[in-house]
Image (cartoon, rainbow, N blue to C red; front, side, top):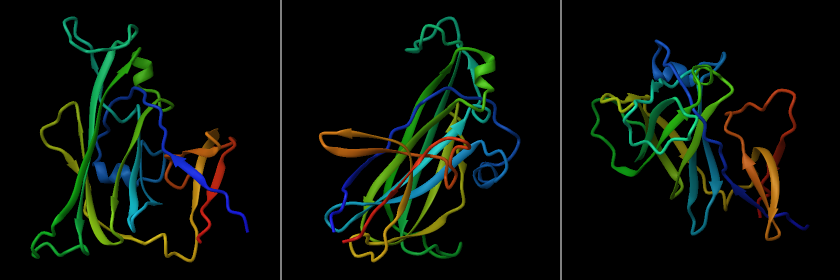
Length: 219
């Protein structure tokens, strides 16, 4: 049986955003109705016996606070930009199962962060839920059980917003008997390899628009 080898790439569009609501960050992450934040964990094959763990995220404009760009500034902003914001998302992964509060802390395996300065051309654009900032964090780790925490900071806040620690099991996809399905937005071909743009809408797909489903076939 001939197998199609797909080269998955993660591509995202960065856009401007606004205004934090008076609810907690974990509530926004897991709220099912009109979500302003999408954060999803994605497990992908890697080499040398490791597995790639990626955190895909998207922050809609009606979530991020904006400020008017001051007259004297050092921003490398677009000519039509009138508002700006800064966003930083970091993750820390710990080895082992999730421990009770009184147990000693587990060893940190890896840390990573994403940060960016966002711009908007008008106040209406900052309030639009059709514009968003998006990206991903990824790391390659040995299969096993881990737990992780996400931290969000906007406009250089001193106190970061933390999620509760969550446990995650990282399988060895090279030994898996079943494949996985990945939702993708579109596809292209580079040097004879299929490249797919992964969606960052958790388990959702755009209403009334075409999408692709990429299936990994185990050896």
